[in-house]
Image (cartoon, rainbow, N blue to C red; front, side, top):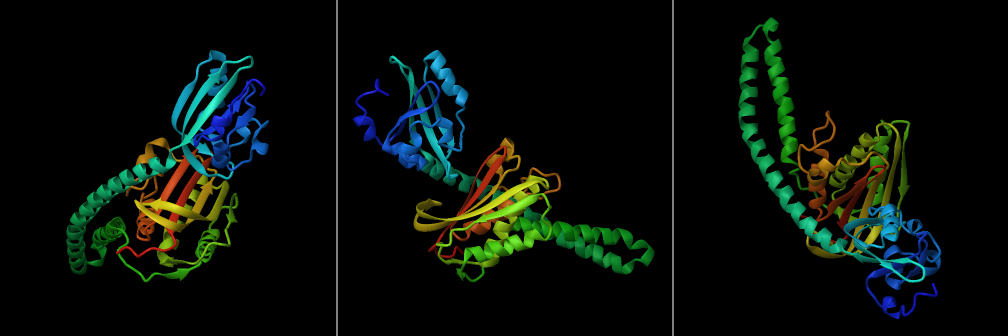
Length: 351
């Protein structure tokens, strides 16, 4: 590293700086990089670049190509998964340093907070429009459906037993459609919120799913015992988290691992409002990941990647968490999907 001088400017930059040699071994990192990756300089310097993070959407081949061509590159809104499994959105700028020995200078600027707030507002608007449309259609269906069921019931009483097969079928299908409409209209009961331990809620869910859990699927827990009791409706939170965990089970197709992680988060902006303290419930699986074509509309009603699915589980989960002034985020790639449920510790019940 003798050819690299005057690093005092880099030491004081808020942008994370990492310098690597041709073997992609780290020769230098500034304090901002330590803070971003939650790793010490002692741990980083001398290590291979790919060993200091879990995943980076910019491939290793891009760095190698940059050495060969002596041309830098920029990757905006890249996804960085740190070793502690934090997901960070970054702008990455890579520049060659043409000295006696070639190096690459990596500038990494964290932009996930601005990106998250913007995406959050856009997602809320889109989801509300979709919900209003679906609820409007559901109300339009519900009234004539009730009349159809009532007419079939009256006709059923007047027919002989040999002729009741078709009216019985009409009533059964009307009841099925009515149940679907009720689910489309979403949860409309407001229950009393009270202080509960989130881990007790999670353990009930694990117990519920364990009865029918395929032998090849294992559930691990990584709970933070310091999490305080939180004011929630336990039935609603249980239903929301159960829907997400059941989705993970179905995605694994009888083989894989689900991990449930709880953590405390400080100073978070959720749905445009700043909260001093919140809890995060992460549900991870090592399944195939969410198809690209579903990601933008995943929380919309009737959106599903399974032929037998109704597409209501995640929509209902999002609605229930929003009633607790929380949010549901996800990141996904082949072999790794994470749903992150964030709920503020101190909040007023949404009516």
